[in-house]
Length: 372
Picture (cartoon, rainbow, N blue to C red):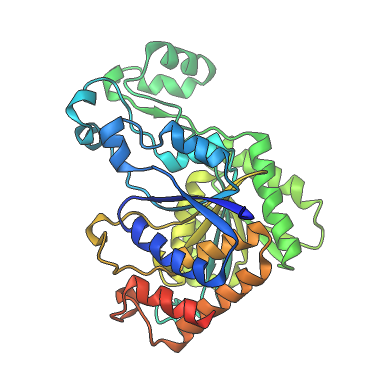
């Protein structure tokens, strides 16, 4: 019996391409694992009205962790049109399966390392090494939304906040409301994870990125909690930055930052910016980590126009495998894989189109495997 059971979810588009690349490397390192395929994505939304079938949830519940490729998500109207005729007009609402996985398994911490590997022509500056900790289950991703706005919701909000009165004349079918929900526990957990990582990796500071001067309660809760948690880590400095200013400062002085922690929506945005500093989404790995389970995925999308062409950069996926090795405690394999990726990037002989080369997705994977 294999040591690990890995739920294998290629998903949509280039997710299948980069997962094939990942398997080349996994086979090379001879991870003692069984890979169990699961159904997820746009195909299953179209023919089952469910992009994350219950059978896939059960698969994950009986696995060690999950490796995931990419997902296609489109707005409400496009999603309705994608359903087979028998499901159209029946009130089915598309919900992102990766967001549901994060909430279903309480994968509260989204870890996104952004590191500039020497020799990468796409690096903004050499030496960038930023790790973003993004709260993963709350905030605007909670999915508590209303449209049209129910009268009872309008009245309750107006009763507790007079600012709602300015929308009184807006018809219900012209008002959409999304609730930004942050809890003290959620804030404390993600901030503690960031400080624990900084302590373990001997990083000197953590930067909390929010917007408390305007979003006073939810962002304020994050910042106040960060100040409380920071008292338990006297050797680590806490810096505070507004999200808008941080976007500017990361471009201006990216070497000034090491560990960034923020809420769900801001984390999604700021981590993409950090990824571009080190070469773009082809280098952006992530882990969705809970207390007992984890789902690992590159942060790029499904890029349907490139699906099956084996054109895209698989390094984000390979670095995602590295994160999975770390979580499994396979530290030697993690280090060896990162070193192999770094060596291929530095040599510059095997490069996909985004790096100015002509190599395929699988060419890169094979080159990394050869280094191993």
